[in-house]
Image (tube, rainbow, N blue to C red; front, side, top):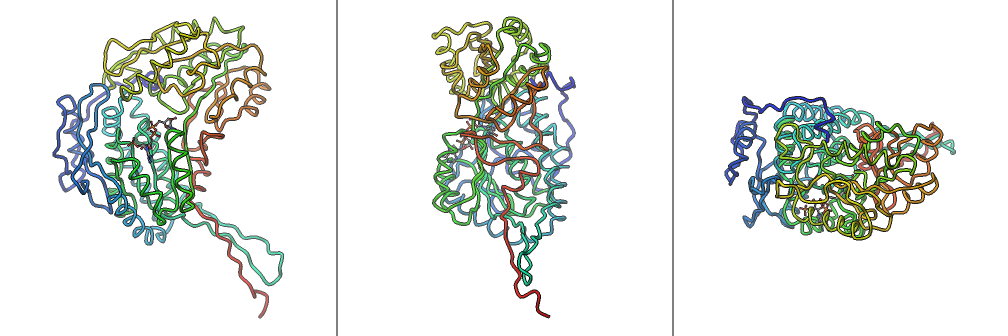
Length: 525
Ligand code: NAP
């Protein structure tokens, strides 16, 4: 999708990357034939890492176990990475804890400079990082490079925010006292991230954590660990000290449990499914950790009769088909008012028909593969349930002729609120279109869910846009716009879509403790 929306820029392979690291990366494992061209360039740049990072050292699993990383477009194995568990995680926590004592005392200006250098390196390696994202996650290359820009943006933004961690002076009600508030880093942070944005979901957490003086143990998804490792390599090159940023991967529950059990870990930040988020929240109670959660959504996209049809079609297309429908803010329920329903479905379907499906490295492709077979089966079961209950197939609704995990961009009309497709997150390229009569009915339908992450409205009525935006029980609302995520605005959900906010000045609060200091005996001479 983003491939289409970003200005068309021909895809060019990087062929002359300077060697960024004196030592040869520890990359000596299997690489599939189709990935070899990209892999050799990434190796030259020191960015194809296949070991975890603990205390500044690249490390294998202690028992030598590995997991395979696949290219979802071909099923080929790209390489293997360590399959780690409790022991390695405990060592990463110790490294982060040791590094915290010095990193938290480094001046904000120094921390800001390190982050700025990291940002510069991420941007200067935008093409290689984009290739890596496409290779392991499948999204089209232009969209993957868009993620690098977006993800690096969090590092740039929080490099600047590092200088603005202000406290307060409270006017004292007692003459002999002075009262102040200090903001201090929380401590060691455990950051668990999903596969759909292999870079941005990490930088959105690590940027503010490091800016505040925290150190981190990151656990990326086992499906997309390579981008996390490349980002960690660039963090080392930027001068972020050993132990400040550690990356472990492998057995998710063993790693999660070790992070939860450790009293040294003072904060868990998680992006992923609501089910896992709830487990982590419960597990964090044992040591009373601070928790922030970015969980699943069920975004309504409400198109009113008075909307500009072209704006609504373009905005809905972006909100639905970004990352082949695999984002937490994807339009899950496209709710269209009856007066514009037929026109909208017709124009929207014509736009969806133009989306080219293919391997992320092919030029012009707007829709890549789904992440794995389980994702395709989930989409198929949702479509089957909907059509068996009366939804109509306007377009697609089957696997793509490319095979593998490619699914045809799909439009279903006459979807009803009680169908599974309207109640659960689709996470695939299926647009489900519902019909409503009045604004009140639209609001009731939109809010009738446990999720509350993103919502979209299309209308040319200013009063209505204000009224509906206020009444929607969601953390983010796009009005006449389908792509609203940015590092400068707060991102997060209400209800069971999460706790806390990422990005923007509010994103810093998640990594800071507030300390009240009271100075007594201040009036005596
Ligand atoms: P997931 O299955 O919950 O996995 C997310 C992360 O949690 C992965 O690193 C996973 O590891 C790990 N994990 C799984 N079980 C765990 C456990 N018991 N303890 C500790 N960690 C555990 O979600 P996903 O399928 O990767 O991502 C899709 C979901 O993320 C969707 O629901 C989407 O809406 C949500 N999401 C939300 C946002 C947001 O900002 N609100 C953004 C993006 C995605 P492994 O992968 O290695 O198993």
